[in-house]
Image 1: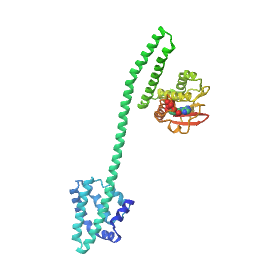
Image 2: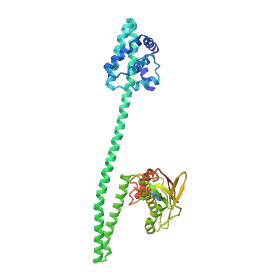
Image 3: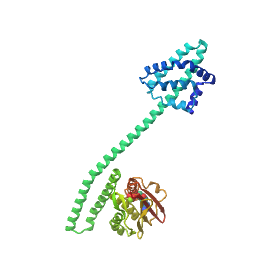
Image 4: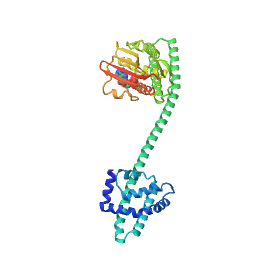
Length: 366
Ligand SMILES: Nc1ncnc2c1ncn2[C@@H]1O[C@H](COP(=O)(O)OP(=O)(O)O)[C@@H](O)[C@H]1O
Ligand SMILES: [Mg+2]
């Protein structure tokens, strides 16, 4: 509307001229069909559109110059270059007819008013073409971005797969070397570099595995599972890590809870949360896992630790890929959790304070 007001103000189509246009209507209307023909001969062969054009000519002369008027001109449906030539056809036809229909002195006034009206219509249509091409540009940019990301993901997961093989081979050879060395001499100093290298290789393998999960979130293969059993299994596997860190890892027992889940992915979710819990707590700390039924038709996996909590400035960034406050963290754990929970249609609730952190994962059972 503001553009319409601006345009009308700019061309100074005053009340007297608007009156002239309205009076022109009954005289010019009988020729609309003829003009339309000329218009489409000049623009494009488009039968069936004539009634639209007649309406357009009528509402141009009669007004009112309101939102409907504006909207109609914003959607002419004609290509830009066609619209220009076609408008000129209409203009010339109008002027010819006016000169026939009006006495000379009067005709000049009416032509002036018509010119202003058609200029206003042009201005509105041009604005639309500009908007339209801007929208198309944005859409194209988005498409290019998405394609680039997909190409990047393919490329990087391909590379990660390629890196994994030599990495495994190197780890294997290192293990072999260590065994042979041990057989000859038992010198801790000599073995230390091997163990350090081994540790680095393990870290690299872990990073690679995390990265692969993240770069290529695999499809969901959901089936009926007892989620309590899946969680219990993860806890058993993480027990050695907990013992090494001198953290008590416990799970509250619960009757089976059946749900349609991807067991491998649920495993990954719980493993990442438990590891974060273990890594957050100091020696003598506790990590507790609880699985419960939820409403309606949902279940919860709650991982609770008595670590120092997530600082306020860290909290908004935990799902960011590669964001980590740990010296050897990959920063992919929570990004993976987030994407896998989202794949299941679930929710993550975080409650954190200096006394500890609780991560509550709510997942639908179906
Ligand atoms: N239970 C927790 N207690 C405190 N901080 C946490 C906890 N879980 C996650 N965080 C914070 O979120 C960050 C990102 O976690 P994550 O994505 O798993 O990466 P990483 O464990 O490799 O650092 C961690 O570095 C840590 O700062
Ligand atoms: Mg982690």
